[in-house]
Image 1 (tube, rainbow, N blue to C red):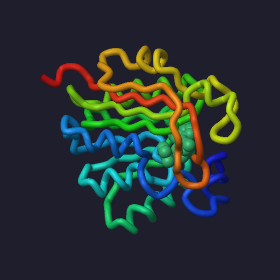
Image 2 (tube, rainbow, N blue to C red; image 1 turned 45 degrees about the vertical axis):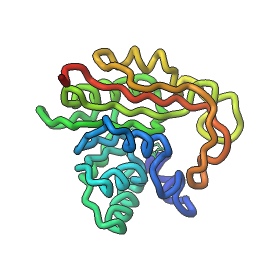
Image 3 (cartoon, rainbow, N blue to C red; image 1 turned 180 degrees about the horizontal axis):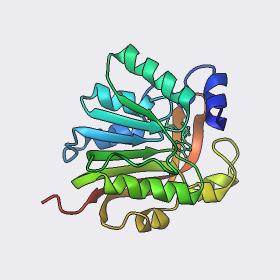
Image 4 (cartoon, helix red, strand yellow; image 1 turned 90 degrees about the horizontal axis):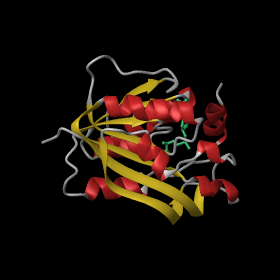
Length: 204
Ligand SMILES: C[S@@+](CC[C@H](N)C(=O)[O-])C[C@H]1O[C@@H](n2cnc3c(N)ncnc32)[C@H](O)[C@@H]1O
């Protein structure tokens, strides 16, 4: 059982809320965001992947936690959507050769930089030309604050590091700053956040 299996099993309600992150809603509301397929990396109990599927996208989701994936499947069923869900470790998961998506979402994956950067690379490679990479997570400054997330800044994001890990993608919008989160039982209050939406070149 992974650390995240235990957290999902012990959860009294949705850990991060039932709806998607505010950022993800904002991206979907953009007039230039036209993606019809999405790969959600580290989708957890499915709050983002399930919602994207309910918006009409064909969604594939990957998460390390079997328990989180099981909960996500239940949430898919509750909303009457079909999501392709895969339980796998992003330290070694690679999509089937030739498989691509029009958007990749990496939301609140806080893990060692090697795994995070590999996930970003694998996600970027799996994007079609012009496809969207959308990343949200705690900024390194969050480690010094009480409350949300682990205490090791190495597990968190920095906008420059994030951009450097995504060569060949051009930033469309980027934010590093303090926002108020109201997401489930775990993400409540002010937090230092990094948000990046970037597009792969070659989309015409
Ligand atoms: C903070 S939760 C966020 C879940 C979801 N993205 C959300 O925003 O609700 C982090 C998730 O990352 C997953 N995770 C952590 N390390 C992972 C890895 N190496 N491979 C795949 N998933 C991983 C955990 O299982 C957990 O579901």
